[in-house]
Length: 392
Image 1 (spheres, rainbow, N blue to C red):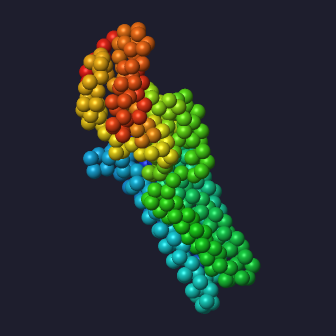
Image 2 (image 1 turned 180 degrees about the vertical axis):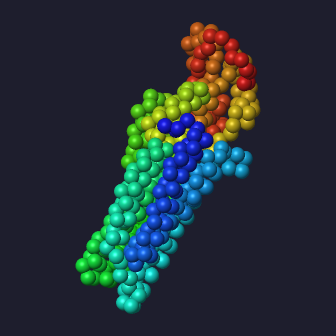
Image 3 (image 1 turned 45 degrees about the vertical axis):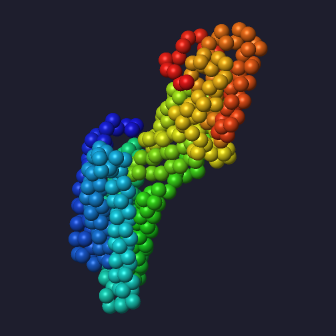
């Protein structure tokens, strides 16, 4: 992970940033509640509740970060990153609840003018302090949220910014109320409530999308496709699937190779190059599962019903029992392509010194294998040293 070497270091950074935010939220929340009560400002009281809700979400962030930092175990082989996602949803729902409660109270006061508060103009100073402090806290938290690719910290950063914006609304409400419009303070509280609920909904929705494994955006998918197709040996790709797990993104993809007859080790090398290239280019991606298809299995006939090596060799042994020279076969390479098994028959180079004999030999092999509907092409491959195993 760029910027942080381990999960434990990641947690240390999140804890430090969040604890600083907690002190700011606590001091501002208590200060606004006291000043709002003394100055009789409904909007400032609502803003104080907003700040204290920030303190509650700070505790939630610390809890989620602590558990998310735990390494994968037997019960959670993919890690604990979804705890951060779940906490983001809870944070969003809590913001919605706070916004609704503040809005209902403010609407009740507007409908009952006798309940309207008459705020003192001097209360504006605490709101000004909040704007500066919370905007600074937003930038501080967002810096580390982007560095750690933490959706939860981004949500908490925006929680701080909504507090700053709501304080601006409070300032406007106090100024207009001082001009002789007492209902404006309650109206400002409604605006603050709507802002809180809207931000809460956005994070609850985003977290919910992640919990149901919604894929990455199209721009990221295009970057993944371009990275894969630029790798030597890759012919095409399909079944590209992505999902988010907290700060991490996971990718599954099927690729076809330009040469479907490459060795297992070469195919593995190509797949590893695909995996490392995607992780290197996209910081959010932590793991890529690459499945190699020798051909596009969405287009070509499936090979799942074809016999495996042991069963096929037993059948070929019977079909080729009377073929002259079959004992010279060193080993077979099997290629499962287009719904058939194609055979590369490896024989010593001496078998090809007499072209006519070689032609008769391969013809006999093909004719003998015709009774096996699973077998496709048969071709001879010369070898200069004996194989390490005897397939027939």
